[in-house]
Length: 300
Length: 260
Ligand SMILES: Nc1ncnc2c1ncn2[C@@H]1O[C@H](COP(=O)(O)OP(=O)(O)O)[C@@H](O)[C@H]1O
Ligand SMILES: [Mg+2]
Image 1: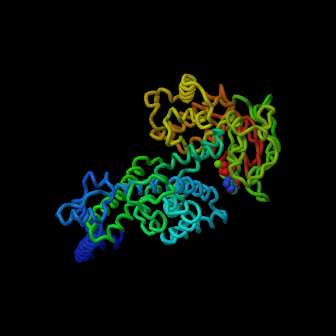
Image 2: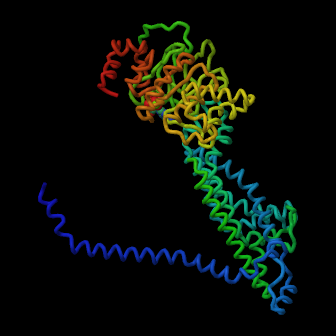
Image 3: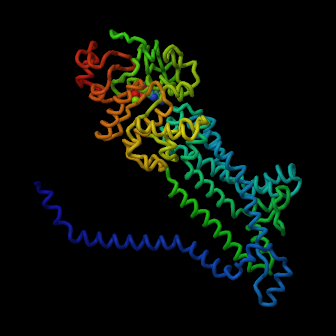
């Protein structure tokens, strides 16, 4: 045993005290900072629940948005505003389905292409373009969808135009999620498939994509929750509709569009809160589901 | 290369095989000529990077996975040029098992065994399928261990069981040849010895080509051995002969642990 080792404990008593103090201070700091991070979410949710829950009943989901007269009458009688946001909910679902039908297959194909051509220069180009696309302001995408679809294809505001704008927003997220997921799947799985004589495209479809299911679906759900609240591009493309619409070439409502309409109508202010609460709940649910899936179906 | 033991009626004949990973790059396998005996275990030995895996993978054309790879020479299965066969036909006849057990994680044990049929869209009746699954699992001595959990995920098995499942998956096609690339290097000694016993059992029905990093494994179970060095096939012959009386000084140095 050498001298240093024996000396070591003797320096410490005061040192340990100050270290304990530092530890304590640090822990308090962490708690305070965490609270600061959580508080906006807690405040938002609290405010939405307090202000919005009153309006949420069955009608809220089944009825279309009221007109301003109905709202005014109800308010002057001291009742809650009648009607709901069924046109907005169905519109949002319709738009998301249409956008997903476009963005998911294209995004997955491009993502797999990038994974297969990792080092190639054109793959890098596509990767960079996709990153740039992710940074394009959504209103610009709305304008583009307006020029392409509203002006040239549906000759008027339409669900299709809105979903094209949303699909372009979803695309970079799905591409990235696909590529990252594919990178995490061990190459040995691909080899296992090929060694059974399975053609390459089938190995991708039936081995790699199922093995990456959790990563892919997490990416897709996050991309959906990302576009659920988009308002600006929809104003330029789907316009809005007072009734439920399932026609791709007709104007369609959406929850965020309704919130905007309610905001502009002094009689409907109460509906802002309930609609926002609904939208927030929808996004949170999607997030929780995606977390669940990635925890449960974790194969890689 | 000296090759004293000519093999009668070989199942595989490799002729003047040279492989480079890129055009103009150095050869990973250089001018290899070798014949493989039917119903025997042939081991491929040599230090890391000497081209064992490349040679093995050429036998069922898995090396074509790398698009810029350059292959010269021929490989014949019986008298058929494998380069002229479709990969599905070829890989049905020549199965492969890898270093790390790689059962399909989304599939049950049952589906893993039958995966070659399912993924290729080969239709067979339920009773045929059941039969193939049972036979293949019996062949790898896994049936008794998993017969009550056939529909559980294959990834829940131990490493050794997973590797035997992968061998069963290769056997399901009733191949003629099974290629194994260091199949026990990720396994513990007990699982390793089970796989070794299994290979010795399997050679009655199949021809086995085994890449191994482990000399004592080659000595224990193989009938013929190749020793490769820097892409060259330095020596090839009966394992007993090679271990007791190597003809090449490089082989002797390797076998006595002077490098590797
Ligand atoms: N994918 C690849 N691309 C380029 N070179 C490779 C690749 N795989 C292997 N090589 C090279 O080929 C040679 C033989 O490799 P390999 O057959 O894997 O050796 P072993 O299996 O004996 O360790 C090595 O020099 C290695 O660097
Ligand atoms: Mg190797």
